[in-house]
Image (cartoon, rainbow, N blue to C red; front, side, top):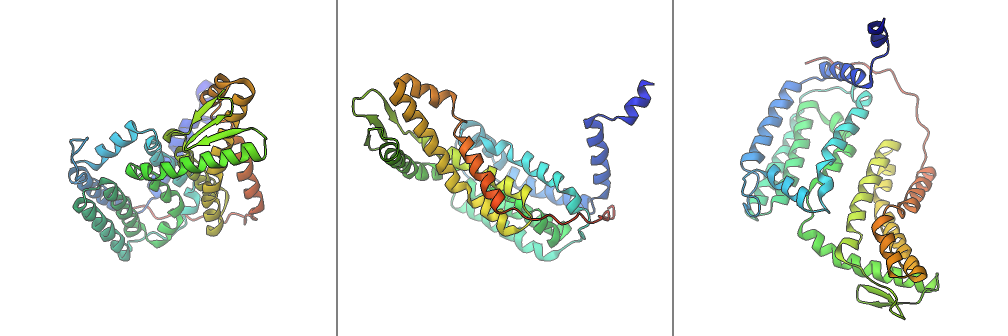
Length: 322
């Protein structure tokens, strides 16, 4: 009795495994792709890291893992591949009817990725080699399954750009972001809220020195910029079909990240002005996600303005198994 009930009501895991096996059997040219993927990954494992600096390994993947696990601004890189795979799985019904065939023009992108990797070796920059790896991998996808598949997965694949550690680029961007965040908070606090703050460089304080808040590198907004860009890119991919609408949603991440950082800093200043330094510290340490509420509200409003009518789903034909 219980076995019959289990068969009639499979668990989520059982349903997923059943669907996965079905999809796997329908993927054409998978042996070709797995072989090419293995060779491509082997190249970047054995000859992928030109620096041999903090990571004494020739593997680009070891260098990436070290960067992701030691820098909070880059730790999201560990989950980006899982997000890309999940989005491709979510889009499987749109990929099934696409004609899959070997498409030789994609070799140009593979060669471009290889060229970028060689350039990374010449200038001793593993980050450049990472770009080359993902460019070439995109070319391998096109080589195996053709242009229609490359086009269909471009937006989830684009997220791999967030796997490139920022490194020195972060240092270059952080200081201007700190200055902007300080100035914007100063203008809004004094002009709109009537809170008398004094700005000294990247430090905000009140006239009586009851509170003082330094906009350090971690508070510059770079981390929130990266997170917001990833969020708007994923949201645009999931919600819209038109490419230009996806681009608009993605680019909205820049102003929305500024909105988040401004709201966060203002909430700290308001709390500190009303209740003292400890209250501002509490908001800073415990309520860091609260400013995402206006960001999400703005994102939903923009999504509503760009809303589109979905066409009825067409009947899909399964691809021929390899």
